[in-house]
Length: 199
Image (cartoon, rainbow, N blue to C red; front, side):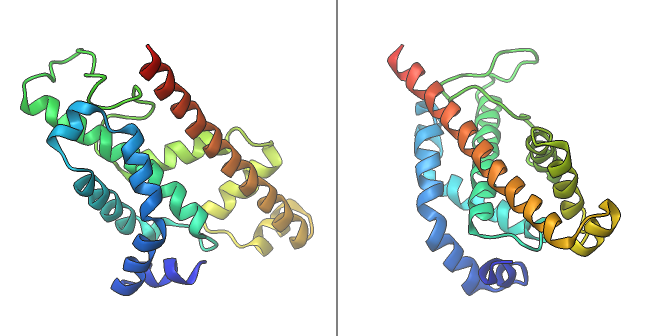
């Protein structure tokens, strides 16, 4: 695990501050692209950013033992998406626009939601990750799921009847593929933004 992430998980304020410094631009850029005009008039990007980091730091107990800064950034982006959705829902409720069955105000949160509208929970994040893992080759997906459940590479290799080095290589390939899938999802959202801006 990245030393900064480990220290932050153990409660180091200095490590948390350094992670914010290293990844702040990622969060600011994401919020800048995805917060709609109506929402930006009511909630500051700084408040949304602060809430994003607060949620991510609270969830650090669940990160895998080999988590690095790239995984931390991916988690930030996912939580930022949920923070925007929750803020949009809260504002609709305050102005009386949250009637059951009503379509959300697309200007509050753009593009249209791809994940649940409820409060961010560990179940939300787990479901999102499992959907990504489900796109992998079954052999790779099995190793990733076992790593996420806390199994060591030695235990995984023994269970699968293969050398530990093979299990590690499969995991590394799976991790690279997961990063590609996250990037593709981001590109799809950006394309939706561009189409909305052009219409």
